Amino acid sequence: MRRRDDFTLAVRRGRRAGRPNVVVHLLHPDEVPDRVGGGTAPPLVGFIVARTVGNAVVRNTARRRLRHLMRPHLDRLPAGSLLVVRANPSAGTARPDELAADLESALDRLLRPASKGRR
Image (tube, rainbow, N blue to C red):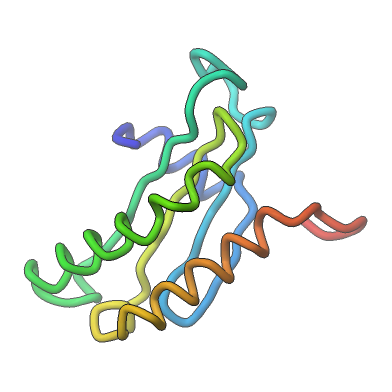
């Protein structure tokens, strides 16, 4: 994901799951307006790693780790969906297994069917 509009849309309208090291926002394809390809387009994933995570080296390391950890889960995402993974400040010093557990837990929460009355 590269367009600012896609990031904004996913963060503002998508479902959110927070964990100590990451916050994940998922916007399903039926909620994405004017997306070219709609439900047949591949899911788009974007990463937000702010300066609060650390200096440039730490931020880029965190982003690479998150990207690597996200790859095996791409097939679980609905086609045409938008997913944003935002690293919390603790992600810069988190062990890789902690980061993986938080990311997987957040994804599991977002991908399970929504219960009535919850968003």
